[in-house]
Image (tube, rainbow, N blue to C red; front, side, top):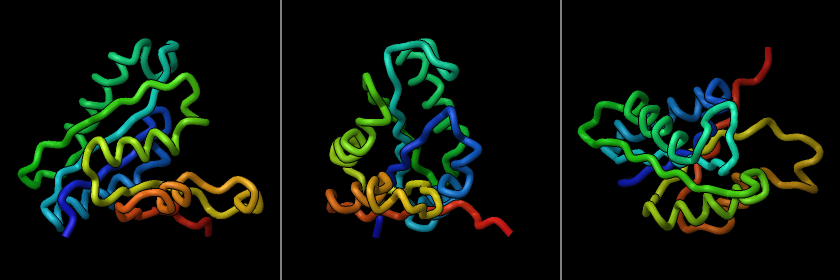
Length: 142
């Protein structure tokens, strides 16, 4: 059913991505699909990487360490942006086309009142791509 699963990854917030990363790996195993991890960085040094090339190396290492053992080698794609927060939706949409993803697994947040005014990334991505989009919410607090 799915052949190429894309997962947007923020290396600065991996702890918040545990659930969507697990879902993506499980789906890749189930469908024997290839995983592509996509990251967005800037040219400016950050806490994660000093350069876009450094970020790309770290994302590739992450991909190799987190992809399921299903016979498909994972890929990693890095996009450079002056303002990753503002450009994120458009970059994810471009990445879907670039990598040929037919499924995108994205982490999301619990709904808030501001979502009516400023929609979450996943809703815009789902509205503007032919790929399936699986939004994975964090666990609900007890």
